Amino acid sequence: MFEAEKFLIKIQPSMMNWSPRMCGNIVRGILICLVSMMVFDNSYGGLGENDVYKIMVVTGGHEFDPSFFQIFDSLTHIEYDTLSQPAFNRFLTTNTLEGYDAVVFYDMWQEINEKEKDAYLQLLDNGVGMLFLHHSLVSYQHWDEFKQIIGGKYIDPEYYDDPDLKGSDYKEDITLNIKIINTIHPVTRGLSDFSIFDEGYQDIEVLPGIEPLLSTSHPDCTPVVAWSHQYKNSNIVYILLGHGPQAYENENYRKLIRNAIIWFSREDG
Image: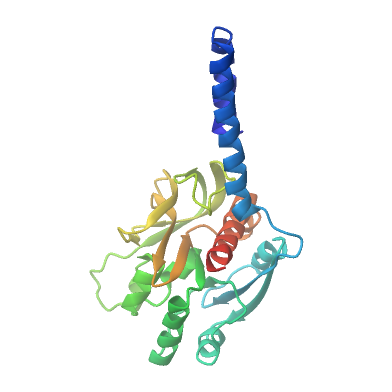
């Protein structure tokens, strides 16, 4: 229910004592608000019969259940191709991803040469939207700019020689109660607070310039579990959620992914 509708229900008893003109003005204002909100919501959620968005899904470097792809099979108006690393990074050096509306990263990859970095950054110059999921935060431990691109970092001590380094950590098989921080962002549109059985990350870096979208109060997980920001000309979204099949099947998780893809596509268009 829209906030304006809730307000109308709340004030109905008081309206009995108001003049007809005052009642008319208030109802007229509420109706204008409702129409405006529906038009605004339709700009991202209302898709025409022939609207189709094409994305590239990138995997590699971390095992995952094949049912992950059922997320994208279930998303109407969205078509996808998939490449695994290192094939995707090599592909970038000879292709600009023309025809693709966004890239979804579910990889956890480390090797990237200078030519591949340049190609990656060119996508950002071109304004291609990027959605990073779960363990993609662990990628490119020794490419400093990647932390700026994604908006944070999972520090994996395995990739460093410092025995005193305090790295990030994870906790599997926990139920996270998720709170929507930003209820008007296109990525969270249509969602309410929800729970998900998943994996939590602890002691990750989150850059100060990001816009938090989701949070949790679970003691075994960092508080901010999804964010957005802009890097170069691209909108970026990171969602910490998405470890295994029970997360993949969560309808709220699928809605977040769908909303992000549509947001990228509409902003680009």
